[in-house]
Length: 383
Image (cartoon, rainbow, N blue to C red; front, side):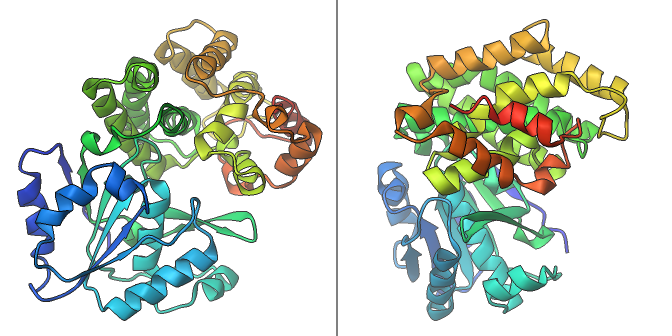
């Protein structure tokens, strides 16, 4: 069964949308809420939902870490089963939404997470209605049919059509409390996802349309959202995040994301910042795709056209300038390209770890085939 998403934008008639969602269950059935421990209150979501949930039975689960681990999922599953809930609401960033998607999926599957990791089986199940409400303009997790989980410091992506949330509410006012650094990290993840989706070998005409619009919105609003945020900038970035999610839901990501996960797992670097460290180098490497190493079955001409169009979207006339533009944007919004050295980590050790633990599935989706030499060339940009 493929889930049809119901998406509501803004606050106008949002109460009607939410009450219609809650009315999918009997009035005395409990609701399970997964929300960030701090973001739920800081975003204004707690205040808003105090009215919506008045006299409703619900359990709120917030005891999970950023980039959820398998023990977070098991604790959430236990709380969910004990709640006897018939509806799930997730409010927060990508971690909260991914965790809710996984809880919904594994509860329906009735299989312990570690057993799924061993068997890698995919089940076609009917899951509960799930409402995802992002409080960051970042991952686009509310629009994807996969979720990320970290197992023994390694990122595992779990994918199934039934993981996609059935309902989404995009309210940019919930992103206003984000700090400049959080806005920069989550916003750069949007830009990176959109760029990688655009050149991915799994891209389609539809996914590129989503990517194009998301890139345009990032170029218009990302810097302003960090340095001088307005409601227009916040709304623009939340829409860009959602579109980037719709794009990667079709195409998935590529090399820059593949090389980012180890930085997050081993060094605690925010995901969007981790992706930023290699994206400029990946742009330059992909721009040199040739007949001998082209990975996209549509051929070199297709890849060259994509790279040319990407430069146009980034408002430059060459891949080198595109790379420089991305580096300059990082600098302006406070994403240091020397984060590891500044925090006392050895960059050479980090490069070895990143190169050794890159996500092979994402690398295989890159338009240029990346051998050990090219991967080493990319990770050399990590400082």
